Amino acid sequence: MGVKSVEHIDRLYWLGRYSERVYTTIKLYGKRFDSMIEEDAEGYEEFCQSLEIPNIYTSVEDFREKYPFGRDDPNSIYSNLMRAYDNAIELREEIGSETLAYVQMAVYELNKAAISDAPMIEFQNILDDTLAFWGIVDDQIEDEETRNIIKLGKRVERIDLYGRLRVDRASMRREVHRINGRIDRSGLRYNKQALARINELIEEEDLNYPEIVREIEKILEV
Image (tube, rainbow, N blue to C red):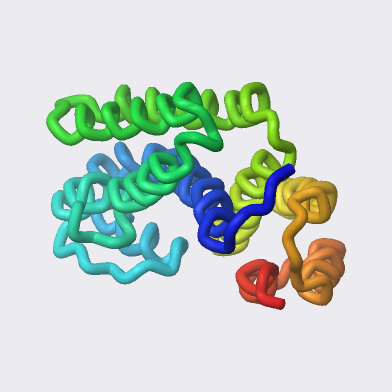
């Protein structure tokens, strides 16, 4: 296991976070896509509130165009996918060309979705590409530390998003238990008090979602 620079570790960690952010937000967007047309034209406002992102959109049509595809919107699916792609490009030698290829295919599918009359087909392909990417990370990357840093980023992002989205307690507990088994294997220094507090919070009958988000966001602050 070689010595990794701080920049290198950061790229691995954020590759995991951004790939998860794309995956979960596409799933969330897909659930809202039809209802925003047929039932709740203002549903995008609730969408923004749930993710705690600025509502910069002027209408449901503006949201459906800019949130998935906006190149100048830092919170768009496009922007998060390109951040994952940029990190993957820089990590090509470490993660391998096959792993990188699935991120590239996700970018290709998103560009197709931008000009498609039925973008949900391409969005499903992006979800499939992301799942394949994670599978290749497990199967093809030999260095255990590299795998664990990417997967730690994925778990941190999922807990963060689940806290913002207020998912059910069982799902939140499952993700916290997974990070408990992953974080030491990453080799990274982490905030043990924050992790201990998160484990306490998920045992409470009524989950304090804002506090879970605050604690997970400082998990690597040491």
